[in-house]
Image 1 (spheres, rainbow, N blue to C red):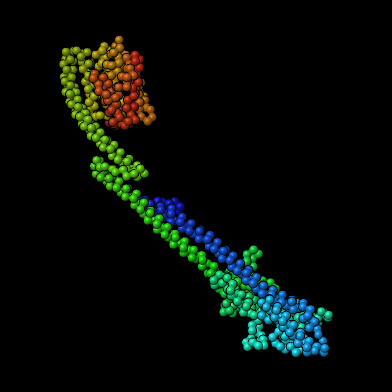
Image 2 (cartoon, one colour; image 1 turned 180 degrees about the vertical axis):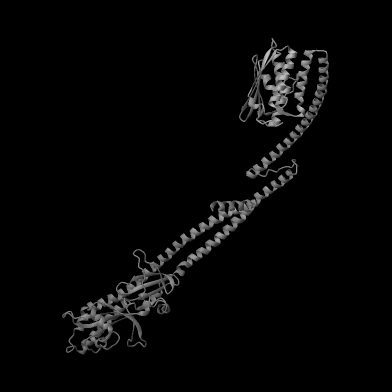
Length: 600
C-alpha cells in the first residue's frame, strides 16, 4: 500500500509543471508549518489566558469572601460587646419590683446611647435587645423589645439551643417602629445567660445587617463577565446572589448539586443545567454560609476565541504574503527556465548558432552556461563529423581505385603465370602464385571485415613474397590461440605493421636478418594481437611521434597511424595500437580489438 501511494504521488509530481511544484513546495514548507505553529501557539495561549482568568476570578472570590467575613465579624463583635457588657447584664438582672421609673429611664438612655455608638462604629444597621422583664421601654420596638414576642419563634429556639453561642439567621422581613416598610435583614442572634445562675436566660441580643448591604457586596464583585455568584447557608437556602433571576430559576438547586472540590485546584469543570461551567465554592468565616461561583465555559473561552480569530487572520495574512512572494520567486525561476527551453527548441531544429543568455550564477545560470558550452561542443563535433565524412568518402574513392588496380594486376598475373608454366619457369610461377594469392586475400571479395585466420594467411603470403625479395632473411613465428581464429578483424591491419617491422626494423640492421613473432589470445574484454620484431627499434622521441598527427616528411609510420585511426574510429577509443620499442633491441606493437565472431 505504501509503495502504491508513493508511486501515485511521484506520478502526480511528474505531471506537474515546475511552477506548480515550486508553489506546492512553498505550501508544504511555509503554510503547513505556519498552521501547526499557529495551532500550538493558540492552544498554549488559550491555557495561559484561561488560567489567568481563573486566577483573577479566584482573587475576586477571595476578596468577596473577606468582605463578607468582615461584615459578619462586625456583627459578631457587636454581639460580643453587648453580651459581655456588665452594665447590660445588670440592667437585665434588675428586680422588677425595685425597678423604679427613674432608673428605668436612665437605663433606657444608657442602652440607647450604647447601642447607637456600637451601630455607628461597627457599621451595623440595628441592635435589638429582647428583655425578659417588662419595663417602660421594653416595647419601644426600635432597640428594645419584649422577650415574650420572640419566645415562640424559630429564631429563639435555635438561639436557645446554642446556649449563648451566636446563630446567623437566614434572610427575613422585620418591621421596625418608625419605618414604614419591612426591612429584609440577616441577624446574629444569641441568648444572654444569667451570670449568677447557669442555664437561665435573662435576654436575647440580635445584631441586624441589611440584606441589601450583603447583596450589594455580592453584586459588586469583579468576577468575569457572565459569571454568577450565589450565597447560601448550610441548609442550601439562598441568601443572596449576583442575579436574582438566575438564582431563582437557573441555579436554584446549586447547593444540592455535587460540585467537585479538588485538593489543589479551586476551580473544577462540571455541568449545570445542560451547560459546561467552571465552579468554585468557599466557606465564609463566622457563619455556615458558602459562596458559590459559576463561570460558563463560553465566558472562559471568549478571550480564547478572540485570540483564535486574531491568530487565524494573522496566519492568513502571512500565508497570502508568503504565497505572493512564492509566486514572484517561482515566476522568476520558471521564466528563466522557459527562456532556456525556447533556446533548446531552436537548437532541436538544427540551428546550433542560437545564443544562450546566462542570467545568473545560481543553478539555472550554471545550467545555461553548461548548455551554451554543450552547443559549442556539438557544433565542433558536427564540423568534425563533416570533416570525417569527407575523409571517409575520399578513402572510399581511394579504396575503389585500389581495388580496380589489384583486379587488373591479378588478371595480368594469371596471364603471366600461364606463360611461365608454358616455358617451365618454376621460380617465376611460384612467385607469381604467391603474389596472386596476396592480392586475392587483399581484395576479400570486397569485404572490409575478414576472419583472423584469413588475416594471418595474408601475412604468411606477404612474408613469403618478402623472403623471395630478400633471400629468406625474415623468420616468421606464429603463437596464436586457435580459439580466436574464427573472430573478425578489419582487413589489412597486420600487413602495415609487419611491413614497417621489415623495412624500418630488420632491414636497417647491419646483417639485415631478423625475426617477426605474431601472438594472439583472448583478453577480457576483447582480443589482443601482438607483432614483435628484433629490428633496430626506435628512440623515445620517434616513438612518441609515430601515432601522432604530426606531418611526416619521409612517410615513415603513416600506415601504422592509419591502422590506429581505423580501429579507434570503428571500435572506439578503448581500442587501437600500443607501441613499445627499445633502441637496438626491437619493437612490440599490441593490437587491441573487441571479440566479435566472424560471420561469412
